[in-house]
Length: 460
Image 1 (spheres, rainbow, N blue to C red):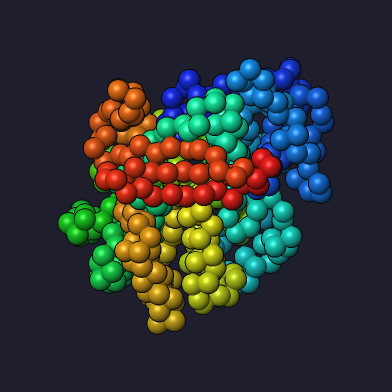
Image 2: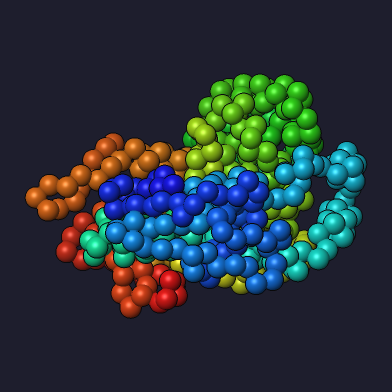
């Protein structure tokens, strides 16, 4: 029951003591754990809801602290896994992943103009604003659940504060990455111009390249990206929307995708249209994936992982897409400002999370769209300079998160220090309680400390 918490915070197990209140039911349903944490899983002593609507039962009322141990009516690791893997989605539970209408759309999509596609997509996504879960525009259910469990651990341990390894190198407050999906030959030809724009703001990004059918991919084109210290990521096989249609075809395509990954020297992968089927990821030979949205209300495949932090799916590290795509912002929501992006950024930064963007060279370069994109880059520079956000690339996040996952805390002379590869970039942090709230302090390498106060209810 403690793995999800110790892996998320990289804290010593001795401070985390959970136990089940009783045997869990065989069926799963929805409940909550305080405000901001919608849960899906099995429960003891209460029948959870079939749907995430109405007044959900609050499991905080059923949590008990006795003799330094926290007794819970659910398994936190099961709940976290259910949310991250999106197993709460009806289509996943009943084996339906693509409708006949969606398959027909992607068959004729290459012949449709942007205007026609926009109209059809808006029709398909109608009613999205009425969806209650995941919570729009950012859902932090996983992060809020684990934060509340850490607060309970502070209370039950009697230690006053619990040490853990801070999320980002150098004590950075959050992390931001820019990614560019290249969907057409026009987009490919605009990559150099987009790199010029990114470079003018000191931002490096990854370019997701489609290996087959959409456009030719030459070694010179790939070198032109890497030589400027941008990254190459494999983007599906041919972007026809059929990658996960059936297992046999997927395995055939996965073999080709893996070969392209080796040929391109690419460690990362993203599926077309953010389609995903996490139970098949074991066939992909990549270090990280970037196909899972935090909230998927405006994506063809609904759901969402409900976290703003990277997490492992087997051997693959998932870097969730946590911010609305540029195409969606402009063509579905008809918004031409950074207001929504800034709102999402603020919510993610409250959790010290990963701010992950998708901007297409195919759509971002017209004057109106470009001006919005450049305003976003200026905002990211401001966050980097004034609020300590780490702006980096997906590959660097992957390398850091894997190093952090192998680090551990050791105590010597009453002081905690970090051991393991990359420890010189890591920072010891502490979780404590003040006025009923969780307080996180980060050792900044000097006597100065950074402090973040959670928005948990004082009565958590």
